[in-house]
Image 1 (spheres, one colour):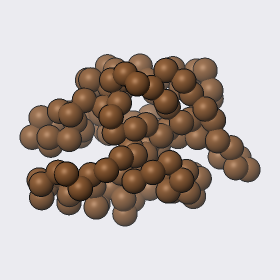
Image 2: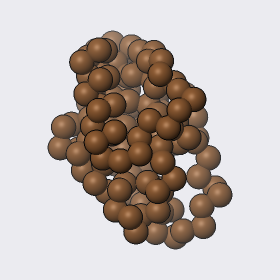
Image 3: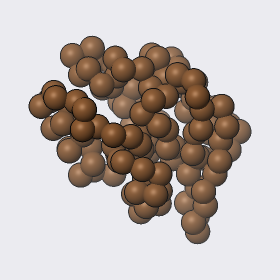
Image 4: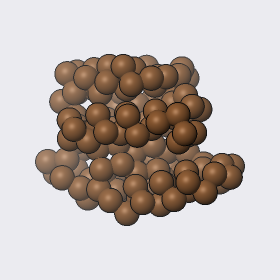
Length: 122
């Protein structure tokens, strides 16, 4: 895993780069959050869709809700970048839409849009 940090003013975002599956469960998500915070001092993260278990995107498993609740509790902002057009679940599409209207979690197509979104929020 490689971590790059993008800084704009007082805002710092950790960009996670890996060819491995990094988040398979809640503990993995917490470990990633703690590692990034400890090593880079960032409370904003960008991770690629491919680095998260596919189970996360099946809302009936509740994994997404559990992980995102932990990130919210610890005031960590998250952007997950990737292509979401292949999902047919209406509930997932609605979930992504609602997340993108907020300021905590974003599901965006690329790193540039994720950086813009996360640098805009405190």
